[in-house]
Each structure stands twice: as structure tokens, then as C-alpha cells.
Image (cartoon, rainbow, N blue to C red; front, top):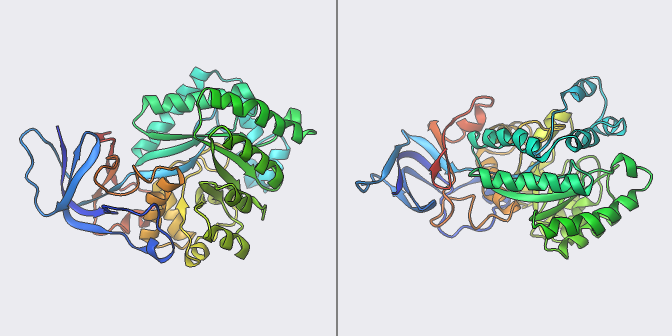
Length: 410
């Protein structure tokens, strides 16, 4: 049986032969059809066009009532597998403590690691599954989920196994990232090099043996891991087929962007601190700059210079950074709104950033991010609206009517 969408007001990001990403001035536009229809068959986009569609007798037909149909969100940076929550630290933030000060007092990532260590794999899965369904309802079709709250081999593997179970249980397309180098655990505080050795010699081989991760990530920033340590970890991961990603330049100019590009990272993420050197390095690379405005909002940080990046001819992806400490939300509609309000991006720039560029940041550009025949039919149908720009404009209220993942209405 085919699924036929009719009476589509605007069908956005149509492309029969899409480029892997869009950058610079091209981010401000998308190919679109008005008064359109779309056919889904075997979980994939079969064809689309303008005007009336005549369905087959056994087709399932969805009347979109003039709403927008667009690719489901591709959220390329989350930490949604975690135990408990960290609202107790929120008051510390309000009282003026910085992210680094909270971490030095045993809070932050180390607090999450302590909670996770006490949580069984089954309980961790049961806590994380509702978050997966939450982001599905919010329009996300593809998501990257990181480990990093284990900080030892046993608990990192536990997190990655839960990520694998989420991929099996839900219709989400999930990419898994090993982030053992998220922070230095308390028992290695005076021996950071010893912890780096444990990540390289023990954790990475164990992750690879169970085939639990697609990517490897390092938090390369002030107070976390150095450029040299980051390079060592990425090189070790590459030997086991783990593609690099980087947390970089959230807290300072760290050299993280440069080391990420040098190791052919698929993306470098956060990027609140970006200067001319970083722009030049990124311009000559295939690395996707990925901005996480939810973290800047929640922590009161400087926002990444998205406008400067786009005007320099770079691509930009936006992601939620869904996590318990610095961005406890996976709502990509809100991320688009922050892109407009705080990053000064245009409506179609944010749309490209949360779809096709986000797909590229996960290595999913061949299957997600555009309306293309043969690609996975993971789509959003919005409420009726005259123009896509209303969606990020109306921040705080969802404009999503229905979500389709792998050709199935959720």
C-alpha cells in the first residue's frame, strides 16, 4: 500500500540530485513546489509533483489541508541517554556560578556520571525511551546520540547499548557516538594522561568489539582535553573505523576546530568562539560547523557567530544538544526560533541548517534531509500556514500536525 499526501500548501527542499550540503548565500533559499502532492512507497519517497493527484484504490491518503510538508529534523548533536536530571544545578547557575565552576565542585558531567553509574542498563533504557518518543513528536526523524556520562568502560558501554536499543525500538534513524573523553573523572583528576590512555587502550577497543558506535568525539576545550590529547584519541578511534566529531570552542579559543579539521571530522560543534583563522580552516574542509543555540540560551553564553560563518561562505547546521545539564530540550522548532532570534539567521537558512546540513553532519546526506525520490520518507506535515516563516516565528507553540518516519505515520 502506498501513502499519498495531497493538498500540500508548500513542499519544501525538493531536489532530485541534491548536493551534500548547502553553504553561504545558498542557505537562504530552498527549492519548493506549491499546491503539491507526494507519494510514499516501501518507506521511501517515490515521487511528487504539483496539482491534483489521483490515488490508486488501495492507497492510504492524507489530506495536508494546505500545510507545509518538509523533511523531518536531523538533530546531529544530542546526549539524550542519561540518568536522572540536574535541575538542582539550575539555582547555582541563577546565582552566577559558571559551567566550569559547577564542574569543579563535582557537578555537571561528573554529577551525571555518578547518577548513571548507579543506574542499571534496563532502567537507563526506560528513562531514555520517553525522550526518544518526545523528539519524534517534535518532528525529529534522524538523531545522533552520544555516550559520555559513563567515564569508565563499563558505563560507557552501558550507554552505547541503550542507544542501540533505542534504534531497535523506535522509528528514529540513530547515529551513535562514543564520547568517553567528555570529562576527566574524579579518580583521574591528578592523572589526566592516565585517563586518556584508558580511553585509547581500553574503551575504544571494547566499543569497537561490540560495534556500538559510528563516531568518536572529544570535548576539546579549556579545562577539558587538550589539542594533543584530542588528536591522540581521534587517531586511535580512526584505527577502529570510528569517524571523528569534536566538541570545540564552547568556552574559549581552544584549537579544537583546527584539530577537528586536521582529522577530517564530520562536524565540529558548539563554536561560540570563532575567529578569522577558524573560518579559513573550515572553508577549506568538508567539516560541518554545528551550532547549539539551546546551550547558549540555557547557560547564558555568547551565541556562536552564525551570521559571520554564512557570510564567509560556510555551511551551518543547528542541533539541540539535548542533555541534562546545559540544554534540557530536544525541541528543534525552538532551535530554529533561536537561530532566527539570537543567531540572526533567515527562515530558510535555519530550515537548511536543521535538515540537509544536519543530515550531512551525521553522514546521512544520501538518505535524509531533502525531498528526493529514493530517500527515506521521514517528513513533517505542519498545520495550515501561508508561509514557512511562520513556523520559527511562532516560538513556543508547535506548528506540527503529523510526523511520518520511514513512511509510517507516528
